[in-house]
Amino acid sequence: MARMPSRAAVPILAIGGVAIIVLLAIAVTSGISDGLDAAVIHAVRSPALNALLGPLRWVTELGSTGAVALVAVLAILLGILFGQWLYGALGALTIGLAALGNEWFKAFVARNRPDLLEPVLIERGFSFPSGHSLLSMVAYGVIGVLIIRSPLPLGVRRGVLAVLAVVVLLVGLSRVWLGVHYPTDVLAGWTAGAVIVLVYARVTRSVSPAPAVAAVAADPAAPRSDPPAPG
Image 1: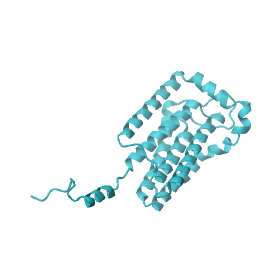
Image 2 (image 1 turned 135 degrees about the vertical axis):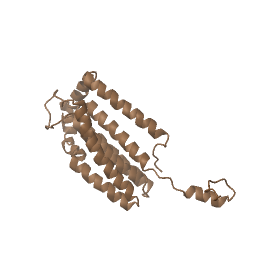
Image 3 (image 1 turned 45 degrees about the horizontal axis):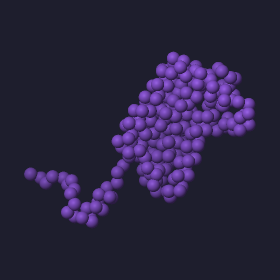
Image 4 (image 1 turned 180 degrees about the vertical axis):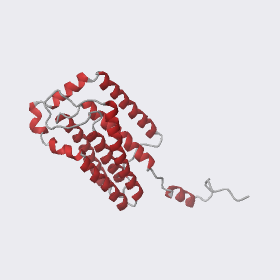
């Protein structure tokens, strides 16, 4: 069975993710990352890759506001289908709050869009972090958490998770190829989205009492924490 990070590991991973985001914000505002961003953009926009990466102009829509809103509805439906309606609803709420938080963070950093090459399409607003990258990570990550915990066969769960991971990867790559984001914008979006998904997974984590009940049934003398008797 696919497993989520342990309870003890989640805070550590979340703190590490926040640290990466802060360092990236410092790097982009100070100009430290300019050389790396320029090198990656020119590599991705190489004429030799145009035919291969051309379909990314449509793939990028999987991280759009409309697509993510549909994924939020899907989270609710999957929650109901798997008997976890509350977790599905919390997943949809998480996606919505992530969208609002992303807009606030963009305004706080206030990084302008790339101007190194002619963009394939025009996007308005600030650049850091990439909203498409962040929201695709959150939306498809929430679906991934619901799928991991579902009663679907292991092979199906693994296949769905692999597809979701590829979608998130391609959406982020599309933002660089289209010329609307720097690579560091995408990396920050992915990292912020991963932190949000980890927190969602931790908050919605449930522990079944079945193993403990089975252990007591097998050994009635086994230690257990019963409520104290009155008086």
